[in-house]
Amino acid sequence: MQDRVRQLNPASFPASARYVLYWAQMNRRLESNHALAYACQLSRERGLPVLFYEGLTCSYPHASDRFHTFLLEGVPETARRLHHHGIGYVFHLRRRHSDHDNALYELARDASAVVADDYPTFVARRYNARVPAKLNIPYFAVDASCIVPMSRIDKREYAAYTIRPKIRKLLPQYLVAPPGIKPGKRFNDPVPAFHTSVRASGIASLVASCEIDHSVRPSTAFHGGRVEAERRLEHFLHSNLRRYASGRNEPSARATSNLSPYLHFGHIASLEVALAAKEYAQEHKLIAGEFLEELIVRRELAFNFARFTEDPETLDALPEWALRTLRQHDPDRREPCYATEQMETAATHDALWNATQNELLLRGKIHGYYRMYWGKKIIEWSATHHDALRFMIAMHDRYALDGRDPNTYTNILWCFGLHDRPWAERPVFGQIRYMSLEGMKRKTGVDAYLREIAELQRTGQESQTVQGELPL
DNA sequence: ATCGGCTCGCGCAA
DNA sequence: TGCGCGAAGCCGAT
Image (tube, rainbow, N blue to C red; front, side, top):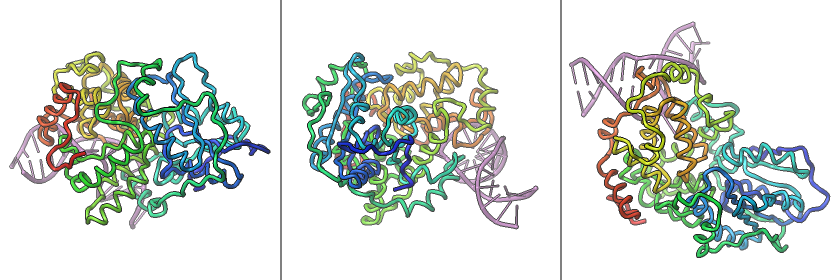
């Protein structure tokens, strides 16, 4: 556990306190959560109960019905499970910009310590840089997101091939069930007035009452929450794991896990998914290697990148050769060259690209393989490389349920050469790897994907099954 | 249908 | 210091 815990301020424990406070910034689950387990460990050592705090504000960029709905859909189940374990729960919904935004500090006043997520992007990164110094109680950040703790890799890795042997070597030590949730005492205090009770039937009206962007509708495909995450994992294991290796780069086969939104919102842990996939593969004589490579090696490479990068949202983070070649080709003429509105509304000349953009607009996620194509074409059609990067990040921030994640930035910057190698020089891209529509047509079922997305656009409904897949 | 070249630099072996 | 090889490819030659 010590590999996962960092105290981010010099404060010591106060003489008296009412609880240990767990601040669920990213990991909103009870299961397979080293951070919550650490809060429970402290609570046992100090004979205190645990209070689980989760906040949702209207004020972060691109707050919308899509993100609010997904997050709120997880809240009733979280409340139920916490109650069952005797852990207190405060959920604070800041609906208006004028509402008070002091919940964490108010709760910390009666706390013995704060335990938060060690997470290298988005709000958690900013909070962990700012908040600990303002508290006079210990503030611990716990790595509950990676299987091999980020602290075990001591430098920024160059590519998958350099981190892979390190992870393989450490994996036996960490691919094990984490400590359980046993608080030192049951939480019995009344919850503060700013707690918001959420019922599944009330989510739509709650979302409507928030000062957020109501034009970004909830995803057609993904509902949030622990129960939904577990259901998708089961579905993946039974229906898709055996064809993952052959079908993962065939979007119309729908052979991937679709767990990235749940991993990002912390409804499920990659550790649980990995253990479940390994066990299922053993029982059913399958090979889970390719899936585990994606889930562990490449995901943790992304966390390693974000952790060791000053600002993962800029091109500065690229390797020297990529920066050099991009700089050289930035003045190249783009043909066509689209304004961002034209791309955002999926109105380019390229039907496949438009479909990937529509998938993002409607589902809130693009299939991993087509997302590379999506990004490469944005580089090809944007006035500058800087514009291309800004647009890709903005699209994920605004529409993607798996956006703002280390994986997001790594996948986007991969399109600019990160973790990749140079290739034959060409206009606009320089030595950055190029991808073509012809390649996509040759290697994937573009027509089937176009039909699927067109159907989704027409009906607003997901068609439930494809060949080889069991009903969800 | 398949193959090699494209091109840089990391990390290990020596 | 030398050498093998790498997150998803392209392209032209055969």
